[in-house]
Length: 403
Image (cartoon, rainbow, N blue to C red):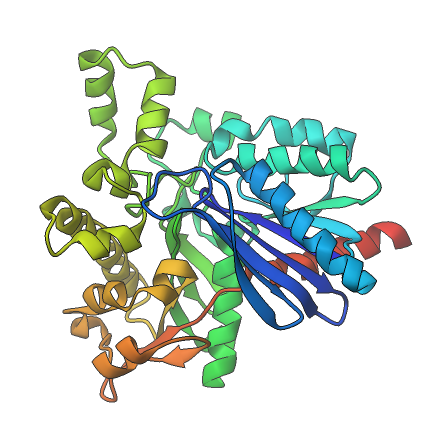
């Protein structure tokens, strides 16, 4: 069976066709700079059977990017029919309290997923639109939803409960849910395999730093014990268009001073803040770094971003009583050595120290960039959410057919 994984970020669309159960990747790629303001044009990096090309992509939304991707894959499968997709597997960011495990999509679950759209405004509507699009344009191909929150079900109440009247937790399930669980779980296992250590013995801080969303996870003995995101993906780090942590009193002040509605505030915090709010010219960290020499706004945006990452690493280092492993993953975490360099400065008190030559010399794959005298191992690991999604989707689809 060929599982086509669709992994929507707020400004990207990653995809893979994986032959299961062999876990053989036939097609892989990513549409980047989708639906956002950037200096560079959108593009699709497409790999089929080991050969990679970069293809132009017209500016547009995720649906347009998906259609273009399917056109490219149709050309591939015309040359090799074994590439054709037989199951769609969607990464779905925020199921609320409706779903706790991988689920087959049918008319009933589609109605339930529609209820979750407000919970992650930058992700759920995009993923939901692709589910609907797949059902409309490829009705013969079944679909499965895999959720980003399951890994964080182990976060203890002292870290997940908000200091609000308990009625809201009981009535609406409001608590820290946490996100990027698929990525954090993948790099946890990958790091322990790389270091030849047992997962259950390790204290890990995983930094998923992406072009859209970013989060940091504290992991102890193979279990998530805290995540920088909260009930929604808005909490935590400074992100490309999201504010991350803010004083909630500021929200009331803005509503009063600017006569803002709740929808206005949601738009400001989710779509007009973070890097783009401070820098204005772009939401892309690559643009920020390129402009930071001459533009003080770019330097300020970079500093705010780095300082928030350092804040959570410090907090989680204390929570874990010093980490055994620090991991950088996703596009910013693996792609920008300057971010890693600045984040790791002055963290020796937590055992974190990196080797400058190893850091700036990193190009691909898993690598240890730790200084030879560091107590904590600092690793760069490309995430593979898609293979985790493929495994879970294949398991659910096979289970559904056998029972």
